[in-house]
Image 1 (tube, rainbow, N blue to C red):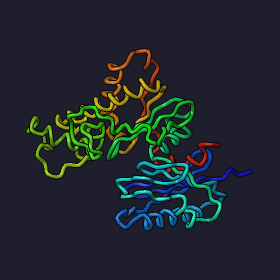
Image 2: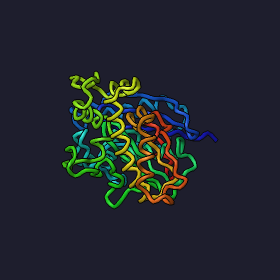
Image 3: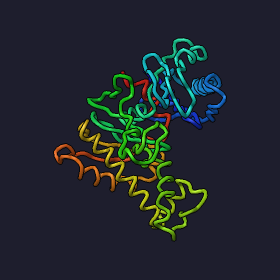
Image 4: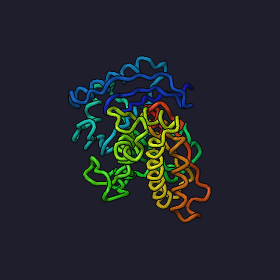
Length: 313
């Protein structure tokens, strides 16, 4: 009997990614479309439905369901995105809206995007065979997920593992959430840019110092060439990431911490060694004995969302 496929949708602030995945983890089709969130939820949901229809048209086998990874605060049971700042969404009933646009009876599964990524790592990525691990994603911001005994920890209001908004310094940089010194103000693409602006005067000979249009890519390229400003900012980010890892190690006693996200993967060579040292100097040694740190192995963002279809099977 031929195993059915799963469709995945990774909903982001700038793009929507789609993937068709088989039960062995092979990605059979990948598509992408702009989010254009400014056009409103209805238009975005139209684009999501169109992308799903395109995957269904490409499938040569039955599709068992569609997994959707979304940013923001959401309810995976009711299928409602309560608040997604980068989409401008408030109380969007994703299940109800998509069921009107999709073939009847097609199962839908909604989760926070980092939770979806963690499920992908557990089934087909760096956490295969690991039942207790933490997933940290550094991109524009910083997010996380935790798996214990093979199950996601979601929390009473589905807000577990909002590690990006763990304040490491209550007098630190202002964060978009209204707090100061949140971890993502340092460990993120935006955090690296803020670090270059703040520390540029310490390294006046760096080409990054005072440059008007610095990008995350430029910072990483400068670090590759040994630029001291870039390396200092990455060191700051690595130590902050280590603080987050230490908190996760104490709370969950994971066997593994997986670091993903666009910036997390791109800067792993600088971040991970510093983060691991910082974590280990902050935690009671038996709590981190045998704990491994690994880079994400899932590079297609919608793959984790597709894996939500198989999460309960």
